[in-house]
Length: 68
Image (cartoon, rainbow, N blue to C red; front, side, top):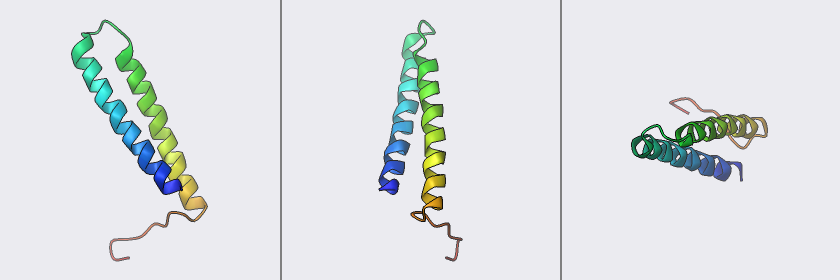
């Protein structure tokens, strides 16, 4: 379950990044949509880190090395 939430969150971060680039090119600095997109992306990134920490804490995610 948590792995699905992590993937969805990551895809939302990519969508926010794409919308920010689109607004940066199209708005010419006339609106705050770029700033809003950045705020959403930062919030989603923090949520992603929290999900990763929760997944590790609850044992759903296990770290492994290169050889493991």
